[in-house]
Image (tube, rainbow, N blue to C red):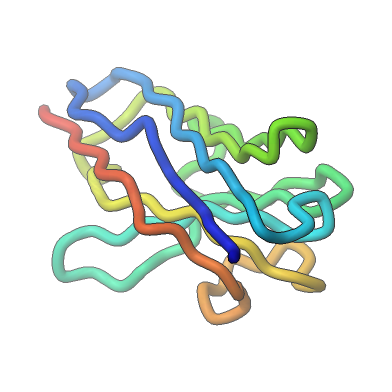
Length: 123
């Protein structure tokens, strides 16, 4: 049974930092591209960052220089370090897994999804 479990969401002030984690089980974590997505109230789900099987990464433009995605294959865990948080970063953050999708940030390309973890940023 495939499971993706996000954690680390919290309420922080603008300029603060958070590290999100996503623990995976039930599939070959090392063989999948792993992505972070977010969805704010009334907004569509958008890609935040992704990391491919070879360790290559890709970020949405608004996250470049502030967010860092990484993965620990030994722990089957995906991370998202978020620095210099802004109020517009507030959203429900999801992790997802996709096979043979490279560095896609399209939600439709991903096969498995977690339930999300809430990030709130106050100004």
